[in-house]
Each structure stands twice: as C-alpha cells, then as structure tokens.
Image (cartoon, rainbow, N blue to C red; front, side, top):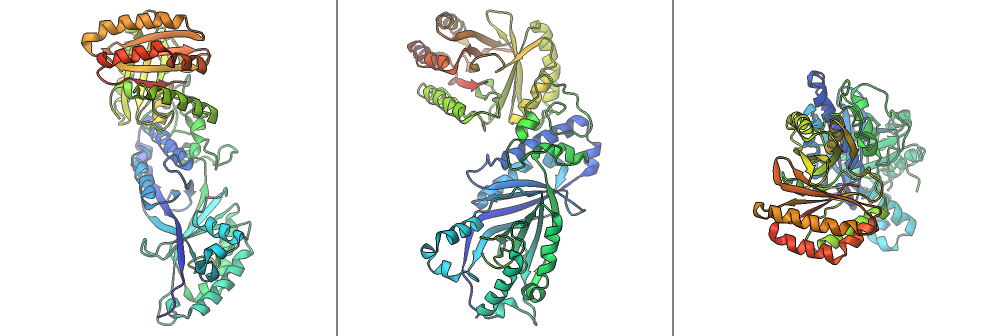
Length: 535
C-alpha cells in the first residue's frame, strides 16, 4: 500500500448554485417579484455580514452561461452552519423562483506533500508557516471581481494511477506544480477544499481574480504540468462575477453590476436596499430593484497547485402574533457605542423580567408611523392595506393604535423579517396625514413598552398610566409619552415615550417609580411586558 500523506481540515465550504425560473419570473406580478427581490437581498446581506454565524465568509456571484444563474458561496466552521445557511435561503420568497441544478460540499484542507515537517511537529514550525497554514484552513472570500470553480480528482486508471505511486514521486510532482502557480501570486487567490467522502469528486477548487483571463491562463498553463497532464480529471467549470447583495434586482433586470462603486466585502447592502422606505412610493416598476421603495413587503430580505492536487497554492506567496413580541425598526447603521448603551438598557429591564431583545436578529420586526388623520379614515385605509399584506407569509400583524389623551394615531406593522418591515414602511407612508416615523423625532428616539392587559384590570391600568404620566412630565429630559390602544383590541396597548437623551430614559428606568409600576403590573398583565427599541 502506498504511503498516505497526512492532512488537516478547517472550515467547511458550500457552493450553492441556483437557476432562475425565468418564465415564472416574467409571469409573476410586479409586487411578487419586488417582494422576492427584497427578501433575497436581505438573505444575502445577512449572510455576507455573517449574522448567522460567529465566523466564516459568504459571497454571491452572477454565473455566466446555461449551467446556473447565481452562485452563493459559504465558508463556515461547521457542516451544521452550512446546512443552516442553505435552508435559510429556502425560506425566502426569492427561492421560490429558483431551482438548484447542482451544489458542492467540501472542507478546506492542507496536506503533507510539501510540508511534512509541519505535520510531524506543528509547534516547532516557524510563526510564518503556522499563520500560512491557518489561513488555508480558515479562508476568507477575497475582494476580487470574479470567481471560477471546478471539481477535480486524481486519476485511478490502468495506465496512470496516482494512488499507486510512491509518496516521494507524488511530492516531487506536486512541488513542480506549485512552482507554476507561484507565478500568479497577487493575481489569483485560490481555496482548495477536500470533498473526499462529501461529494462526487475529490476536491473543489475556487479561483478568485480581478481579471477573468488570469483564471483561464493559470488553468491552461498548469494543464502542461505532469501532475495534471497524466493524473488530473476535471469536472464542470463555472465562472461568475461577484455583485453586492443590493444589486440583486438590477441583476435580474439585466442591468450592469455593480450598479455603484462600492466595497463588496462591506455589509452595507441592507442600508442601501432597505434604508429608505419611509416616504417612498410603494409603486415600483419592472422586476424589482435593490431599494425598498417600489418593493412589496413579502420578503423580509500549502504547497502544490490546484490543478490535480490535494492541497494546492498556485497563487499565494507566503414568533408570535401579538404586537407585544416585536422589535422596533432600528437603524442598520447602529454604532458600537449605541449597541453598548442598548445592552445596558436590556440588562436594566431584565432585572424587572421585562423582555428586551437584541436590537437586530429578533423573531419579528415592527415599523411604526404616526398619523393625524381621523381614526375612521385611517382604519379604513389600513384595513385595505392589511388585506394585501396578509397574502405574504412573513406578515404577522398590522393594526391602528389611538393615543388615549390626545389626537394621535399610530400604525404598527409587524413582520417576520426586518426587510419586510422596512418595505412595509414605504406602503404605510402613503397613508393619509402621516406626520412621522418612530425614531424620527429629535432626542433619544422613541421607545415602546407593549402590554397585553387582563380585561378586568383595563380601567385600573389606564388610571395607573395617568399617574405615571404625571410623574414623567416632571422628569428631566422627558418630552412626550402616549398610551396607544389598539382600535380592535382594547387590551392590546403600547407606550410610546420620547426623551431628550438616552441617559434621561435610563434615569427613569432606574427610578423607584418605574420599579413600583413594574411590580404592580405583574398582576394586571396577561404576560410579561415587551420593551421595543424604535430609535
């Protein structure tokens, strides 16, 4: 038996190829296409920012030719994380317009052909070599414009059988192969991942480059190396251009991508695609685009060489249905300082057993807009809008709330995805006499407490709010607080409170009055209150 070279494995890799059902896409109504774009953008943005995992890398590419239309590539520390990423795509509206003609599963690998000493005693290796190996085991998707992918195996024929050769002969050919690849250092970044036992071939090779002809040249030149000429067997080749998630709509419309100059590695697509719903018209055109105005809210949103090698580096030189479970429509550009302060508020509220979820990634999301229209006029409009929203599986609830002591109404729309909530804001902004969106006021921003009150305590709850409201008016930094009551369920309420600064609100949370109110509320509420950040 020939000697088996040692290997080491790192992150797992999924190449998820998707083909668009163009007939279904063309025949779908505009609102459904726009919903699919919004949902697809949100999924891609989330995964490029690795919101679904602590570590890893993801990117999306437009594939040329008939074999696929889109390639989504994921690097993750575990197979389970890859599985979640794949299944989460299937939950999007956009996935309904696609099929999966093929995919490829593998794991990043290094072998001992050219660095046997590293495997014998990794701790004795110099720091540079250790970092180099670690980089191959935990690869990142580089900021390159193009990606080529193909699977390959080593030949096991009657004349040429790689696995019958002595290890020193294999190592010699692999080293010569690597020398060819080193000429492309800086032009090509490659990731070699083993698929032995995982997929149909033995390795998956991904080549990243800014010039696609560099991918062609390196594959062509290495064909002449003995290791490829005699022992390489290759599968199907794919070539694709990377694009920002926000440009999914532009891609489907046949426009040039990227549509704007930007760093595609930066997780900014959500802000571009969904950050301007308020005040925008919901009436879009064509097959959708990368911005929420015009979208329907159904979506949310070492050694060797790659060619014929186990370990090549030819390029590198060294939910529920109640409003009280919601999260607010928070800004996607929240700073680290703001996140820290929000965390302080959550910790303070947790002491009172008040649910205050993370500012992002909650089960459901809310957008709130205020109107000065009459209650009857506003409810009539919202009822029609809600009928359209109910066609989408991501819609949880849309309702009108009326301020108890002044002429102010709020429309609250709750969705399972943040992108859908943002998109819905574009529709709600068209309602009559909308004066502001939660969080647009000056100061700290609007916060909310959602309550479901036991019906027998409703009157007592309202009286207590009046008492607390009187206390609030005397507090430094307090601007306005309203008790908003659902027109269709008077036991469903939320408190909208505005402050000059975050610390002013924190002072109230730390007060004895707040603690006493919370303690009293345990007996009158049907479930614990929910705090919502609407800033």
